[in-house]
Amino acid sequence: MNLKADDIELSNKANNRRKSTKREVELPLFSFSSVAAATNNFSDTNKLGEGGFGPVYKGVLAKGDEIAVKRLSVRSRQGLQELKNEALVIAKVQHKNLVRLLGCCIERDEKLLIYEYLPNKSLDFFLFDATKRLLLELGTRLQIIEGIVEGLLYLHLHSRVRIIHRDLKASNILLDKEMKPKISDFGMARIFKGNESKANTNRVAGTFGYIPPEYVYQGICSIKSDVYSFGMLLLEIDNRVLELIDPVLLEDASCSKHMLSRYVNIALLCVQERADERPTMSDVDSMLKNEAATLPPPKQPAYSHVRNTASSAVSPASRPEDCSINQITVSNLEAR
Image 1 (cartoon, rainbow, N blue to C red):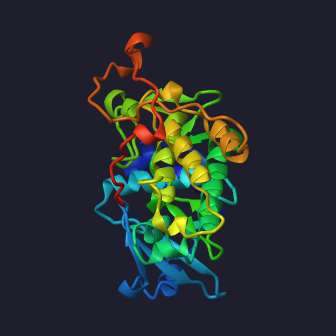
Image 2 (spheres, rainbow, N blue to C red):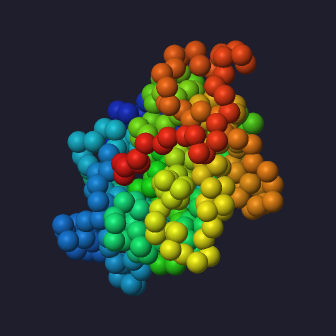
């Protein structure tokens, strides 16, 4: 059964205002009673976490399939917009490295989105725990990085519509039973038309620490916004080289300082202050796969010194000097 996007509304009045602009989202509909039964009536023991939209619960359907259920908080106006946006965006995409939306439930005041359940939680669950990060061997980390790159390449280049995620971070990378990553939480995502690759917005979406300066100061959102977020995520995954290298990785016999330095070099290219100097995700994919290719030295990373909102117009003579990994100081990264 098709769900109209405007069915996810708080009132008939709002529904009537938008009738002329309805867009269809092809999603299976679940009954509220079946979802309530699957989640043990949304019990606290089934609760997986909470976002701006409301809580998320684990559930098991009558046929035995495990699910994750986002339940919109009745009082969350922000959550309503995110839920509507997520339903519109994720119904348009399908990729092995994107979380799969199974359906929705719209009954009375209840608005629910039902997803595949991923048993290994999210990447931040491992990265920012001194004990659990021991489970992230080098091969696992590389698998996670490659999967995130593939997912972003699909969103930026290969899906039916170009999508900018706008909230890429460790807590939005879910892990399946084989520790393969799936990008999740498309509540802040933006669909671009045709060959459009950037836009101006009055509302900055995302998480501080993962948002590039041109977006914070000028409201410019582009594919390079996701590239910046990926660079920050890559630094978190590989942690610091030399001083930046995670000691856990140095114990891995297959690990080399040269390789890890290369990964951090790529990350620093992604977090350069000027968006036009950052690589695209296609460039990142090529750099990761072609170890023989020479990498350019990264320029000063964003927020490393005070810049005004006109940074995009900096003349070549006043641009920051190229800087090597050894010269850069990167602040400790914290989970958000």
